[in-house]
Image 1 (cartoon, rainbow, N blue to C red):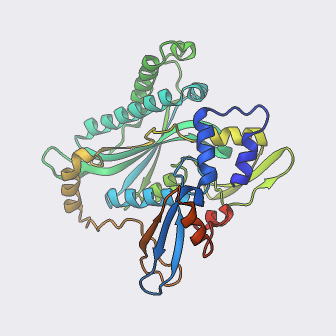
Image 2: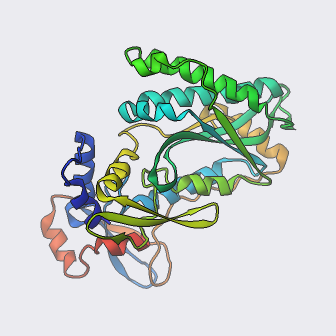
Length: 357
């Protein structure tokens, strides 16, 4: 996929920020000998393999799948085995241009607004709930559509530390609170932006869409994991490319849809959807925050949710699936060692890595 992205990034009229250019340079080294790596050995069948280090850059089409899977497993382990609500908070389309110019201001304002909306639910119910928020910037066809997803537990602890099911969601009140807090936050963050200062509460296009997942929130987590690392389309698919455009497929509500974009539009959208360096796109509140670890344990006991030991990602032998052990580290500057192991196994092609990462 880098064979597509890199040439597109050099098209006339495509402007790269310093962060974008640096990220692309790091992606070129992803899973290659230039990044160094480690030698793994199987104690069962004596297989030896070399794993070259990933770049771990958001938006990297090579190493993103492993990072997505690790976040998904950690989050599934964290949330309670109970009913969850999937809330999607939308904002008026007029703010899309503001997000393009200053993504951090819009994202931080929306995080604050959604956090406040969930606080409204907690005050209305008298319960300490568990929630996590994930910011997304894209819609279908990689279109610009900043919005927020929230996973909310279907129950919580009351003032006596007793588990109580959540009876209702005050949706209209949540929408109003989101609108007021978001607009106030954004005006404070961007006092010199005429567009932001001119927009007042006449806009009514704030909506909270709700779906209920009985018994578990894992399906929501699986959906959110797909684009959390800045890769907003399936990079393992076959792309149809001609001289002017690129065509790709997406699954939307179980229906496969095809989008065709000009090459310039494709690369601009792809790069713009990569979250700013260092920005936290997932945040945990209430029962799911570190502050309430003991309360989360109490809730687990009351609903009969047996907490299994979290098992971190392990490298398994490709032949016998035994856990492999690291026997040697290859530093970035250790070219001699890279060449020595390269005789046995050189760095795989990027296209191969896409299918197994």
